[in-house]
Structure formats: C-alpha cells, structure tokens
Image 1 (cartoon, rainbow, N blue to C red):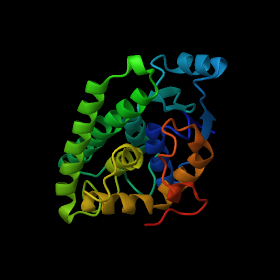
Image 2: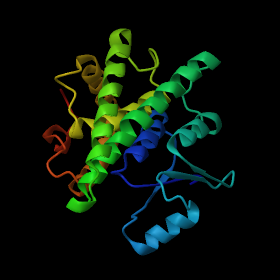
Image 3: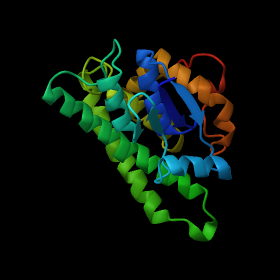
Length: 231
C-alpha cells in the first residue's frame, strides 16, 4: 500500500490524522510504533529523528511526512477524498489553521504537560508548570465556549482539519480538567465530535490500549464500552 502511517493508537496526535484518513476513506496501512521497545524505537528514530508521532510514509512519491497538521494538508492536496478538510478560499483556510493551532498549542500541549508531570517522581515534579498549563486550558476553554455560540464545527458549518485537531485534544483534556459542567457550548461541540463515525472508529481502535494511559481511572466509562459513545 502506498501510504503507511507510523503511529500508536493511544497517541492524541495520531488520533488527529486517523480521523482525517477515516473521514475520506483514504487507503493506508498502519505501522505500530512502540517507543518503549528498543528495536521499534530505533527504527522510528531512523525514520524521523525527532521521535514524535505520527509520521506518514508515501512510497509512491518517495516522501516521509512528519507533523500531524502537515500530514493532513498533504493528504488533502495529494490524496483528496470526497470531504475536503481545507476549504477553498485563503480566508477560510486561515481560519481553519488558526483553530488547528489553537487546539494543538493551547489544549493538546497543556494536557501533555499535566499528564507528563504525573509520571515524574515526587522530587522532579513541576507544580508551577502544571499550574500554567491549567491556566492555559481554562483560557482555551473560555475562547472555544464563546466562539461556538453560533457554529456547528469550529471553523464553520463543515468538518475540517481544525475539528480533526479538536477531538483528540478535548478527549484527553476532559480527563485532566473536565469542562462538561462549566462550558456547555464546548461540551456540546465535543459531543458532536464524538458522534462522528470516524471518531468512534479511532476510539474503538484505541480502547485495547486505554489501560496504558498513565492517569489511572481517568478515562470515562462511556469510552470503555464496546459501543458508540453517547451523551
């Protein structure tokens, strides 16, 4: 198969690209990366020395594409499907990219900081950094809450790259700083995301690995069942 996604089913940034692939039914194969296994780690670092997942390999065009946003834009340009994930006009694309960056930098990254800190030994923890990450999450939640007053999807009325970014960010953010009771518009938007077949498929594929999530007991029971998540 031409396209191979090097990924792990638990990785939020891998979820982002998988949603894009499933939205358009793009043919691809998955190569499971286990950074805790020396041979798998070495092979992945040979492919992309930065060591961040996911990475897309296109054997037809002879290219290795890292970074989730760049992968989705690459797919939209070179392997388009029936559902464009980037709109036609410059202004619309700018809006999509703005919200993609917002979810990646101001939701995804703070969540990773909070979760990562819980893996540290007591003497190595960074309470100031965690507090800053929590403050950033609150600001991002407030922004999205206001923004979603009259929208179905975050960049308009069509599902885009920005929504691919939003879902995994919110999926994990809700486990470390719940928003359902404090931000009703954000919560309603998350429910729409979780109702999409592409997202349900990604969650189902991640389910066998949920026990590896480092915050024990954080994953809501609704996502642990072998059925589509419902409100």
